[in-house]
Image 1 (cartoon, rainbow, N blue to C red):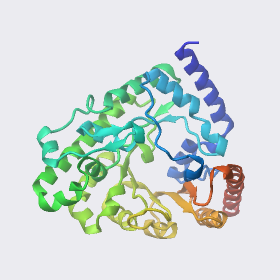
Image 2: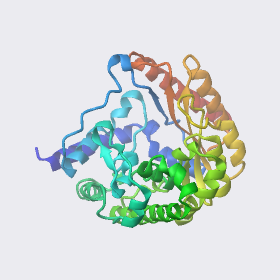
Image 3: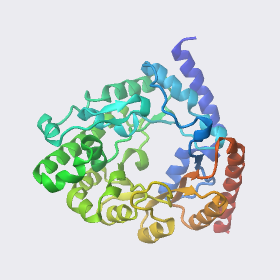
Length: 380
């Protein structure tokens, strides 16, 4: 059987799963929540941390090079895998190689053994001297174009494409410069401004390029994927540092987008600073994180109070303490039952191990039922 025939077969099998499981359709739920329309199913990811004792979490060997057609087949063949754990599925193919997608255009190597994470840094002055990378041919953008063209040529139109993880200006700066990103605004302000203007210009030019390559028929344009600014590294600086040295570049992108989703990485001061100072926000995030949060995390109650009556979607993700998983989720579902713009998207149980997967599936099913009943109580 040819690769093309296998792609047809895999697409048909995936479509059958999509049609059979509206309770797991992340794309349909996201569209409803953004519009303020209740979706009849919770549709949330439930996971756990790697079980080190069972050999999970070790760096994987880099995959062998594959053709665009084989990469497409691999995605289609695994696109419904998450149903095993009752987790969300979507007919939307992501592109790129995670957080390092845009930094690769600035000469940052992606470490295949560590999931293509950015590896190494470059001096600010060197980047400024080189100027704007080509938004079509630099880094891994040619590979992304190959994946777009293969998807459009070999799959039906219901298979959508969304942009890669473009991060945000300061995240990109941190991945390129390393610790220099925290010092340069203070020690080399003119060079810093030139560098950040370069990053911002490249960000927007690449967004335009990718949008054109994908085309309107295939573009999945939900802001959480298409118009997103990630602010993870902003959690490592103060509000004043953000306002003085980062905000103007975020604002330029938010104005270009006309509607923007913010990933504050749970930081309370990042949530508040972006919400108060950026235009066109229609989606942001909140949720209590217990592990490894540099600036703490903003609670859902606090986020809802800060948003008030504005029509802003709130995406919720939390870590669930061992033994309190059900109490935490029930409280959140009750809290969100009166606000159709609250989306419960991802939860990680801190106490679960590999052997607990049957327990997790049953818990997931029970919490889906609780969510439906909470919605019914709201309506009645």
